[in-house]
Length: 79
Image (cartoon, rainbow, N blue to C red):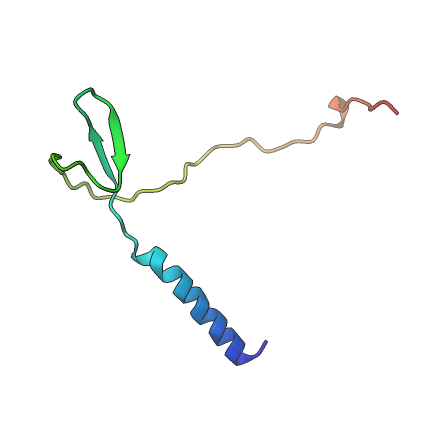
């Protein structure tokens, strides 16, 4: 590929990723009077806020056993 094309592709990628980097919106969790837990990007007006520092991840790790192929459990198909 040509150098101007590579530069344009890099610039386009940066332009598309910049909003994601600067979005740093807060996540709020609160409990209402009935004990229900709510989550949102804006707290209710009457909320008393407590700053909690840490990393928020939307990924959950799952342990998975490795797949072992056992040809003896395959049932023959009717033809």
